[in-house]
Image (cartoon, rainbow, N blue to C red):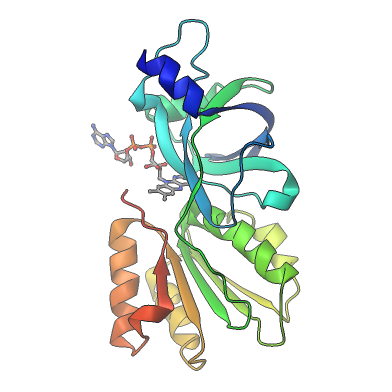
Length: 233
Ligand SMILES: Cc1cc2nc3c(=O)[nH]c(=O)nc-3n(C[C@H](O)[C@H](O)[C@H](O)COP(=O)(O)OP(=O)(O)OC[C@H]3O[C@@H](n4cnc5c(N)ncnc54)[C@H](O)[C@@H]3O)c2cc1C
């Protein structure tokens, strides 16, 4: 009964592309059907089961993931890390093949009302940059004379996610700072303080969000200028 109900309120997505961004980082893309509408910066619950052929609902196969594609790209994608000893959910993602189906719920957006007249500072940890990719595309498409993006991403690995694409964005609008350690992270954030107009967008773990928020507030950035994609993990 519950499986039937969930099948009714979710949408089936067919895998169109699997990109290995780095040894343990994967982007999965799906054909976007007309009944799924999302705005840049959205996330949704993805279920790595199609709930067909007797497959029952299993909440262990469900996670919130950010949609890394812009609506104009006509495909839905997410980026995630799949490491050794991964969860049941990640293992089933790893086994996905082209044309396999998964399901998703209605997208939700914690980053509404992008202001294209203000400079923005995007601060993310690892795959958190996925949330920002469609926001950057939207911002670039609507840029004004005041538009400027500082994109700061911290990761321990050698290859940063989407770095080639981000480095190709017009450098009069997008400044990229891909850093590997906390000292460099805070140095790059500090460098943004000269512009009092900045709006700060933060995507990371709860601890990361708390630490960055504390640092910004301690440096007289107003609470209203700090936005989070409320992550719990
Ligand atoms: C709004 C939002 C957007 C998100 N967007 C993304 C995204 O775009 N990409 C993405 O990858 N993730 C995203 N996440 C996080 C995502 O939902 C998952 O929590 C994350 O990917 C980890 O999933 P997992 O299955 O690997 O680990 P989980 O099973 O969810 O476990 C979380 C952590 O706990 C550890 N753990 C779990 N069980 C045990 C245990 N028994 N003993 C020891 N350690 C354990 C795991 O190793 C893991 O590090 C988002 C979360 C939110 C809230």
